[in-house]
Length: 110
View: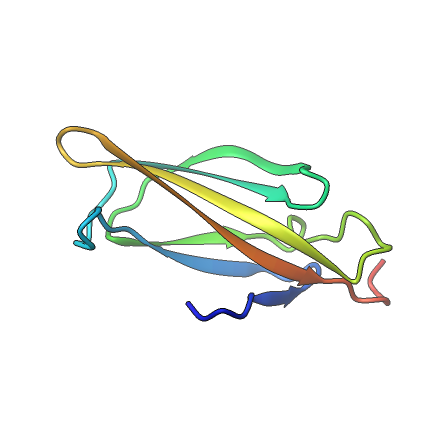
């Protein structure tokens, strides 16, 4: 990933590909996964912890258009935080990561 933050328009579906690896960088297939989505500025929970079951070392998570709605119409951009937690390996190791992206407020969306 580059240093620029991904920006999407409000009420736009966003698919994020998660790639899972252990501490050495070797690909792993999680036995279980959870994700949640929050608004960064207001700390508003948009999606509570939700389970998913990956079948490979990559998994697409879809953030819906409704989840990418602007919460505060006075802001030009809102940052959203996707947090992912996985369990992997025979000894049930855990790993977590987060991804922050921006949602652009479009003035004509109601």
